[in-house]
Image (cartoon, rainbow, N blue to C red; front, side, top):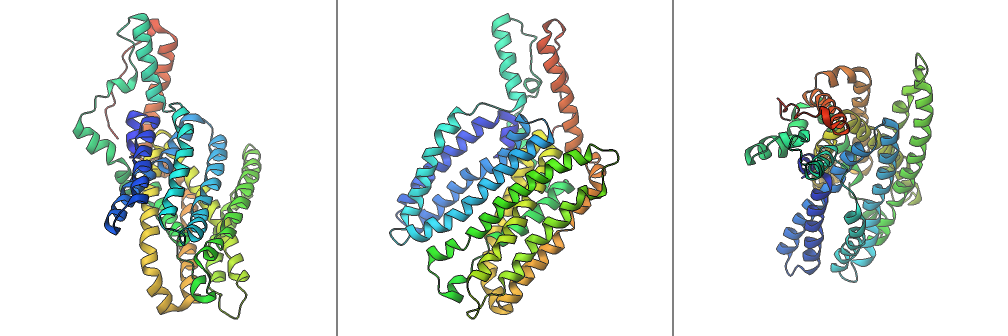
Amino acid sequence: MSPLSESYGRKPVLIATFVVFTAFTLGTALAPTFAGLVIMRLLAGIGASTPISVIGGVYADIYNTRKARGLVITIFMAATTWGPLIGPIASGYVAPVSWRWAYWVSLIVAGATWPFLVLMPETYGPIVLKRKARYLREKQGDANVVAPVELQKQDLRELVVVVLTRPIRMFLFEAIVTTTCLYLSVVYAIFYNPIIFRGTYGFTSGQVGLTFLPIGVGSMIAGGIYLVWDSFLARSQAKTPAPAWTQIEEYIRLPLACLGGPLFGGQRESIHWIVPTLSALPFGLGFLLIFMGELNYLVDAYEVYAASAMGAASCSRSLFGVVLPFAAKPMYNDLGVAWACSLLGFLSLLMSAIPFVFIKFGDRIRANSKFCRELKQKKEEEERAKYESAHPSHQSVGNKHEEGV
């Protein structure tokens, strides 16, 4: 759904999909059969997938500088990390009363979110310009006042072929999106890997949920580190030439996510449960630092197309988060806890080469990107449209995009 926000605006898509999420969450709570429950969950998940993929585009609309976007994405990621952490805790203690209450709680949270969503203004620049052009036509009676987006006539075929397939094409043909999706998918799958405290220590469902809390603590520490580091980085890069240590954060954050796997794998009955529990703290710290860095890079690289790029990332990492738990049980049975967790840590270490490729070749990759070139053209047209809106006597209808992405 995220590419639709780049054609019809952020707010209409967010509201439409949140209606779907709210309605089918209610249906999930009332589902009479297991088959009905699965179908309702599927449809509710489709509706819930939009905000996390569209939010990058919203921030790109509102904030013009990399520093400002980095700040709000840092806050957003730190906040959203707590959703998957609180969920297992709430369901672990509520489900024994009634499994339906897990979905009633979700419905209550959705209801509390609605006022904020309804009051949110439209942020997508081309749609804002379209509304302004329509207002000027009505007020001045000048039919020549046209926003660039109004010149892009989309039929159903273009909507399906160009717009809705954009995240897929970005995943397949944009090197930045492809590698970022793979990296985030591995980290996210480890995040959702089933906690094995139940088998080793005999924890209840609620107690198992509480073992996620160190990940949240690590994410809060990561948010503070990122903000402080970004401030130092901005001041250092203002110097000519920038000091070599300005890229050291990549060397610090990546091993932290890898460290949690082997440490967590050290759990056994003879070791107190606090030891493997606290091993989730460095993982949470590295996990969020990786997410903030990679998602910031996507938003900075694609700006108005950030919703599609983040949509591809959201879809791929969610699929990994679903698939890996099915492989977790046989993996732990065959390899043992220690080696299974170490394997995931080594896999994270392997993927950690990706950000260094961006550091070394990022400019060259973006220069060869079809979407980045189109973005540059689109920004030039928007600036021209803003000038013409401010100077009506110089208005023109503009030029239609030659290449649709």
